Image (cartoon, one colour):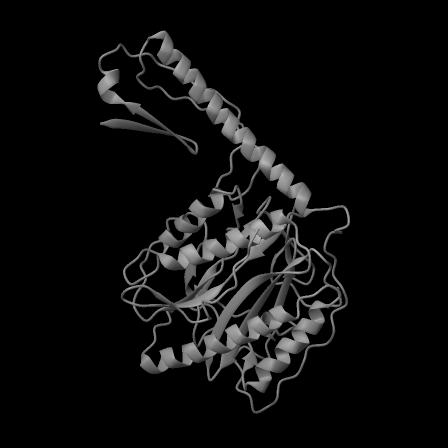
Length: 384
């Protein structure tokens, strides 16, 4: 039988049967390592003392093996640190200036005959509804229709992503397509949000307000579309590449998309909500990316935001998924710190160290055997 000892992200496996034939010797491994904590989500330097005692052979060869293990542990951590620093340099060339707010044009209007959500007309941010949104066959049909429209709008918005195009132009085009379909752009007027779509560029984690800033060659941009159709919300987002994007930025976008897909893959009736966060964190950590813990997925349906709250980082959230439930999964990954700064508009939220962030989102329906993606599973693959 093997004895497994976990040291940070490293696993030391010792063969007990052989060790019982030799005397026990305590070995203390002390190292100052740069570790990433998924529970905090940042990449700050943590001076960590690793002290573990385990039985090893007193022979000279066993001592050498222990030294080799310690060196490999330190070498792996150093390699991860070097890779992260290199990717940050690649993703932040001298020509890319920090994101700054441009001019925000007036909010667009919606025809009177289009059904509007109840929060429209109030600047107060609605409270999170405590009710799970469970649907019968009629409700599921409405959710599918809203999700399908949101997916089509998002695909169209992606075709507009080109250098020199402003995020305000994207907002206007998205707004027009939504009202032409007889739907309402859900973000417009939600808690006073002034636009019909969220556009989050480079270091913006989420909730970017469209403005006069032109997209630059090498930018990445998340476009978050939600439509309100026949009394139901469909919510989805994707991070798009603008022009010639660095390999480091492409990798961040690709891994974020993979995190969403893997998170969805574990969902079905009876599964714990916390499994989503563990699955996403496991994958993100392989690439040394931070998983933002401030922003979450949520129930969605006739209400824009409701329980359950979906954490994308490791957590102990109680509760299980049930058939007929709809909610979003929308992880945000960063190349650096997950700490953030919110601008004076009270919406636009950027990484506090200026490192890039990427996000993907789907609305899903829980079934007995899995999860149905209501906002179109055909995201194009990002290649690096």
